[in-house]
Amino acid sequence: MGNIKEAELPGLGKKYQAELESGERMVVVIYDEGHRELFYFPPEENEPACSVTLTDQEARQIGSIIGGAFYQPKMLEKLETAIAELRIEWLKIAPGAPIAGKSIGELGLRKNLNVTVIAVIEEERKGKKRTTINPGPGFVFSPGQTVVVAGKAGSIEQFQEMVTGKGE
Image 1 (cartoon, rainbow, N blue to C red):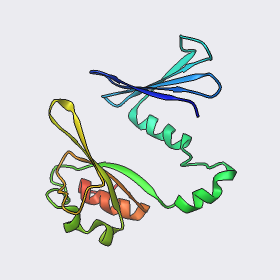
Image 2: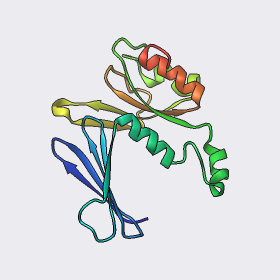
Image 3: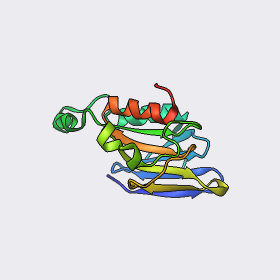
Image 4: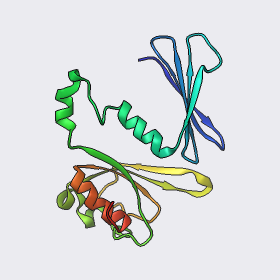
């Protein structure tokens, strides 16, 4: 794989530039509002040959396809078997959600639901975000936080009901 550079775009979002082994470049701009722009640059060209704009949902769907969530090449079948049931979700805690005001330990998420909280992302003042990686059992959930959770599909759906107050 080639080199990937990341740049902050103040007031707009982030830019990622991937230098591919073929000499081509891909640039992805992720805007704070959620949409993405992708640009393709042929080798040694400074102007993009083409571009596409995606909504947040479209970008996540395309990312899943590229990441192999829907189809794995034959050589990766063994890996697919090992992680086929794993799901990772980003879920925003709704106001009045059953999980709000309770800690990870109090809820017994691993023991009772067999889910693992990977991270919690929360907005701070001036639009900055604070991320807590692998929060401990004393971590208390609050409305507005985004919880990154891993587990099997059924467990994730049960957790989602606790986060949103309703099923999918």
